[in-house]
Length: 389
Image (cartoon, rainbow, N blue to C red):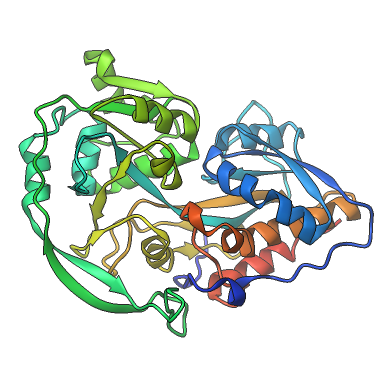
């Protein structure tokens, strides 16, 4: 696989990012789309403006990344959103021959918890791996306490007069300063209730891949069904009441919101919706990082993308300043050929809108805004240009 140079991404003002899409002269097209629950919220929020901008519409069946792949495989949908690459058949069929992966959304996976403290706790990726694999079972475990007693570096990004993050010439967020902080937290002697995705999930696949990179002993494999990881299966078997499986991002976040002393993982917007707190996570540079569009953008700038397939490669332990190590790319899984010029045009417009306009119009979901003229934006446009009739 030939990989490009590291990509530079940008989080900037809406005015500089909005992509003008002229509504088609043809009659409105309604597309069928399914897949990742991670983007269901932002896709739904953008729905009205998408239709206004393009003249088209689509129905989105939010299930999981695996569900979207399976629907594309069985020709039930026109395209799908997936948080993981489509590299193996899902339902006994074959991967579409003209498949393309087009990076469309980039966002941080938040590690969120339900504790009666207003302080934000700090965790290393290794500690997170030990929690989800069952090695750590109490909130006041010495490892968690040590994470919260340390002195850390934090990155502050430069802002313009509008409060928007300033970027350098390559699209990277500009670091204004680095501070040193110490935020000790008193944690309860209570068992940790682990809420995990029970369905086939690209979020789980990315999350467990990052945990494997940081702690291969406690997370020896990565799996889109995280409870099928050997260590986690053993932990669930040993203490089944301490682990609760739910489907979809909304499902795990809702359950965590109802379960005292719990922890889970999902898109950051689900934390506020369910009155959960987001953990700060340390990275390989030794920074303590909050999951948001800036830190995810810094991580995404280190990604490499295959120019032919669109598949990205993650470096979870890169030492760039301010990066958030649990960052995910959601692909639009599309076909180069649809055999229908009208449908192909509608798919192009849909992917183009969601890649360049959606996060600008819906900035509160934690997804980074991809500039069309940044290296990633140029590569996305080139991939979209491969879609034909």
